[in-house]
Length: 159
View 1 (cartoon, rainbow, N blue to C red):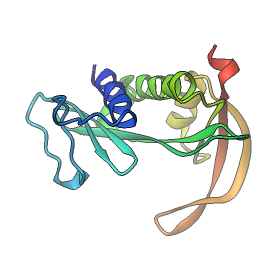
View 2 (cartoon, one colour; view 1 turned 180 degrees about the vertical axis):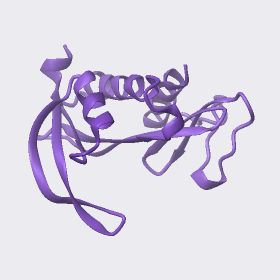
View 3 (cartoon, rainbow, N blue to C red; view 1 turned 45 degrees about the horizontal axis):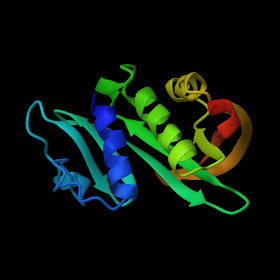
View 4 (cartoon, rainbow, N blue to C red; view 1 turned 45 degrees about the vertical axis):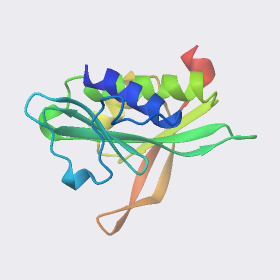
């Protein structure tokens, strides 16, 4: 249910709709965001859409959106350990990819994950991404450059 609200909030943000006026909880600073017990919805900070079901449970981004000859975006996400494996992020990934392909008319969505992150690899495979490569020292995490597995999903795979 929370990810349906996430999708609505993502559409609202892209269409310039005032989220607070529409009744969706929003905050510019995630650290200050404290939902009421049992409350469901999202927050938006920069380009991160936060998911919450009574508490902040995760976030998802579609960054580096390019038009022209590339027509692609980069997916990023995280979820708190207590909420992992419950389907929240899989639904959010599907909804954000659907929005990227149908509304933004992107041809491709890319993602990456650490080689030892089995839950992330399973999530990406389950949501239709294909493993495409390996990038050495791809992203700096906790001050250390880390290798990543590269994944991609194209519009033709979504249709």
